[in-house]
Image (cartoon, rainbow, N blue to C red; front, top):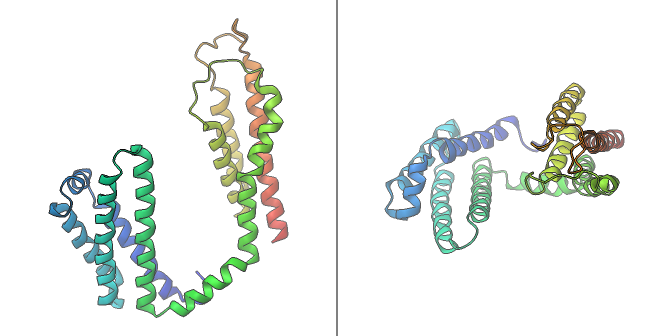
Length: 264
């Protein structure tokens, strides 16, 4: 983590996170989650989940078992889960997917924050964490990497759009793709490419380019049997358009990553 924390101290946090992953994901069944939503505190699955949380957190603390920290983890876990269930009922009229996504994100963030607090309580590391947080925002390398990723996500997305818009009108066919799918595919591939360059895994980029090119080149409308269709669709133009976007995206990502590595 940071020179302020020893490997033994950092491993305790990792063990607590492992315990959380086991209890919150591997040991929760769809049937149990549904029962908690219906019955709230009356559901046996709710209290069984709290029991599992206590058991696995205690087991993975090993010799560093701390009862106040364990109580904090278990009680807060139950309170957070109960609050999530109540909020889920109160905002049931909202879009279900959006509601579930935000409740999930908030729920997990709160659990992780509590685990970090419990961890600091066990190792007496509040001063160390304060020093770590004070140093982090001003760490040159971290800020540079963040800037690189944000550049790939923001400006490059619009730059590629502007550079390819002149050909977009020539690709005439019914759009059956997911909304903004191309945009998000581009953003994700640039994030992956930058990461691979930073860790010097250049070979993997070649496989990624090949896989992306193959998938996109065979992605044509079902009606496009011939090279040129009466409705104006051109297989060749589609292929060229896809290749231009792909190479612009990969090229920008590689360039950003190389600049970041040079500045580091």
